[in-house]
Length: 234
Image (cartoon, rainbow, N blue to C red; front, top):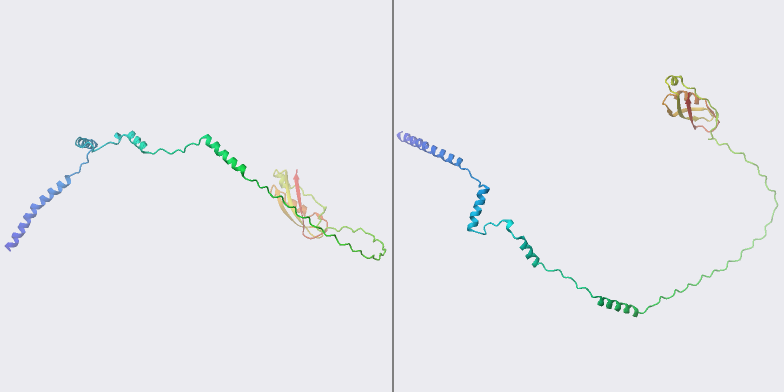
């Protein structure tokens, strides 16, 4: 029992000693800040190094560019230029070529051989037909054929002009145009009227349809069509 109390007291005393030491170490670590040298400090450091080591730092602006260019120019080989041919040698070469051309034999082209003209065979003699018995006959009398009537032809037999609508005049309309298609039966009467175009719209349509229904045409084929245009003007 006494031993345990002694050990506990010793550990407590040790922890009390280590705690301030740990705190002091942490504070010193927090206060340590790495400093970055300024430009002036760097230049001063370079000057000190140059005093002891002249080749330590050589600025780019101190390089002699002209000497480098001169060295590069001296080391570059000059381009080779072919020697010009003298006029005398050129004239001599032309003369040699002309003599060679004149000495070559000229071979004439062979003349074309004319092809023989084709021989045309004589036509065979025409066969003589035996005389035929000629029988005299009277020429037929030509009679005029009456022209056939075209069943699709359309001829207006009678027509009726529509009256100017009173409603249109009352509304201030003074003129207009209506274009319609009429379907004609075999007897010549109008079977239907279709309004194709009206200006102004639907003002004169009824009057035109009623008037065109009473038109008469020539008899003919059933289903013929006829287009009519009616103009109105006060």
